[in-house]
Length: 308
Image (cartoon, rainbow, N blue to C red; front, side):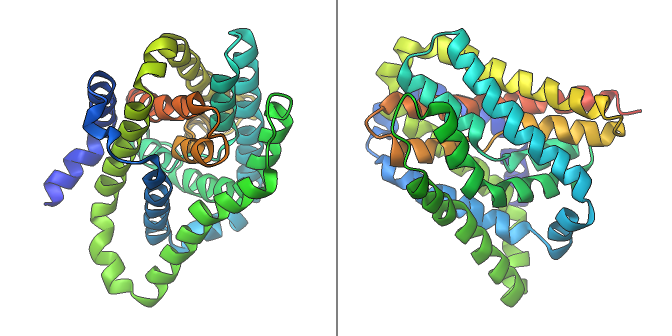
């Protein structure tokens, strides 16, 4: 069982890509599953994140305030502004523009920690940045979406804040409590969590694609291009910021990956909950979920080869 789980976690990007391709060609394969399941699934993924966080991980946020501040500041400026600039440059339709901006305003993705480890980056910094950006998300994500997309559509910042608390913060807190009060059970399930999260992400992407296959075929190549550029520029600028600040290479690598990889599942959930009148707004998050796992695997190999 452990070997199967390791295989699933290792080939997450390929699995997500295959599911996306299958549901694009055969939407009926997952269209029978309602989009309402996306939020509970993301909550379960965040619960798993809470199970794997330790007290030492949380201490990183307090023990390395300068590094965490640099990381979060870069995260919540570079990716939102990149998203906005790309929507303007490519004159994206309103629905797609909202989705791209949502992705840009979300915190770092949990997969970034695995990619940073494989890239031989500063794993402690990566974990600390993910925790810090996730905790900041209930305030910063709605605010940034309102600032960048408020002229296109009404943004209910309070509702979005509460959604992030329910979907992200509460499940993480529940995971931490389980780790505290039932440690033996937590330790027994932790090795299987990466595989479970990978399958949950793949299923989420499949559901979104199956419900929007026709629209995705119409605007597919354009949104894929924008999402790829968003991610690649984020990876590059993140590393550049680290080098300009003369951070050690492992820190620059962690900064690159944390900035470039977003919690696109959260972006998809927020699009479903708060922008239901704009179905295409869910597409950029789904595409990002596929692409950033592929680019993450590639960049991890590049960084690890040049680590010495």
